[in-house]
Amino acid sequence: VLQEHPVVITKFIRGAREVEVDAVAKDGRV
Image 1 (cartoon, rainbow, N blue to C red):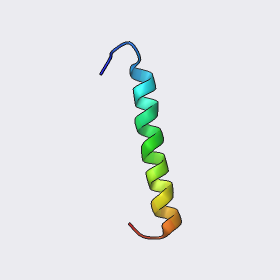
Image 2: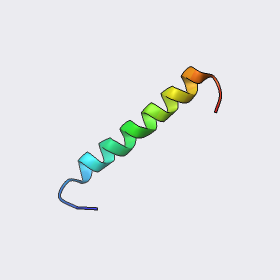
Image 3: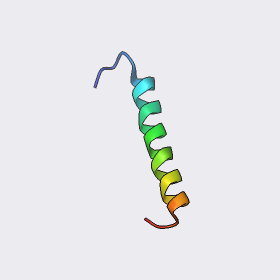
Image 4: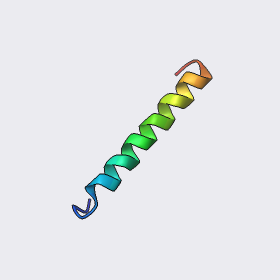
């Protein structure tokens, strides 16, 4: 993990989690 772009990594992780949550919510089940 490069400390030069920690914000980018954070956004990537948050974005991935948001997509996962949306997928679960849309599917209606885990």
